[in-house]
Length: 188
Image (cartoon, rainbow, N blue to C red; front, side):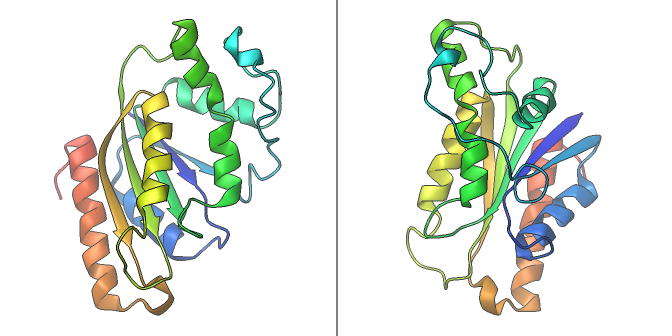
């Protein structure tokens, strides 16, 4: 069992990391963290050159090649990001844009993933809870998971993280542990 986590938080040890650490504490098998801010920050954005429309890879060769390698045999894909102005973080979005090769693979009819994967999202935001707070980030995540042939199993969201109480964290933590059970069929 292999899980790839796309981690898009600027703060290395903030609430998003806390959510990821809770998830990782119970996730079985190998977990690969794609830390967009620290390890993959210098990935070039998509140039829209359309090379991938006719080739099974990207013309740009940088650290994104490691992301493609990690995804090859992943069983589960997790998107973990704080929400800034209704979307995933900018550096994470840059990584996602380079996943265009998987959209193009459907057009070329040579999808590299023979088996469907499972996917989920862990999203948090400092703002108080309000309608639509996570909708744009969820739409981006859903599109990414779809192109990776990962079925969205569930999304855990946490708002008002600028004034997070321990009681609210415990509720979120329980939701994350339930998500692990849904994804892997593990029991607490």
